[in-house]
Image (tube, rainbow, N blue to C red):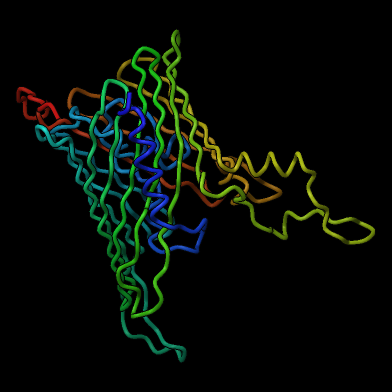
Length: 356
């Protein structure tokens, strides 16, 4: 039974000896680490999942899901974001006896090409900007229900002549009940530091986040629901938006939300919900809702589908192809595409999976 508590104790130990600030938004460096890259994850509304079904594309954001079934599998993901921005990752899995299972990932974001000019309008040509993270993820089962994992990240940021290096780790633990088809994961992300600041400036904190997620497949329907809880390290995720302030028509004073309304709003900003319907074995249909994204990015008089996301997944013999769209703004939705492949099946080799 002692092994059952190891994932939780491991994370608590990291948090105690690694002081962090409860900050979100633009207060951190390397914010690209928290962007949703996997099409499946994006379709379900969040930036991580708790589902143990050997999907290598979920390993980047939850290393406790890494299994020996990912041996000799790879994933490629691309996101056509706004303007000229695009990002994605490439992953490959390998298992070694007695050591565990590993997934190596190269993650990047390309901000596009910019015209360099000074205050007088004199131009000096074009320049590019991008950020990169090389991640080595490790996962191992403690017993039939508990598993742990960790990611080590080496980070490099290049913004014109400004460069920065950093390191970070993610630690995670998962509980999996095969009989109930239930997965619960606790993940502490981006615990680390900026080794060198931009041009000798002050070091900035990394976008630390503590997340809890679960997924459960219904017994008599081909449907799985997902619940993700973000930013457990910080209760109040709201901010003052003058456009949403209600003022007294007589005094002009800003009306404060009632206790119940304020509590409910703050609580719901932590939750992301999603569902995955699999009418046939080779097809998945997905839908997600992110309350915080909707509240922060909607236009007051035309909220439309901001905060909602959807996607589909196709499973072939050696490939899985996933596509999704996630609505951030009325101006449009980013396109996500992720392709995973089992290289043994692709090259018609007998699959031999080492026991970790």
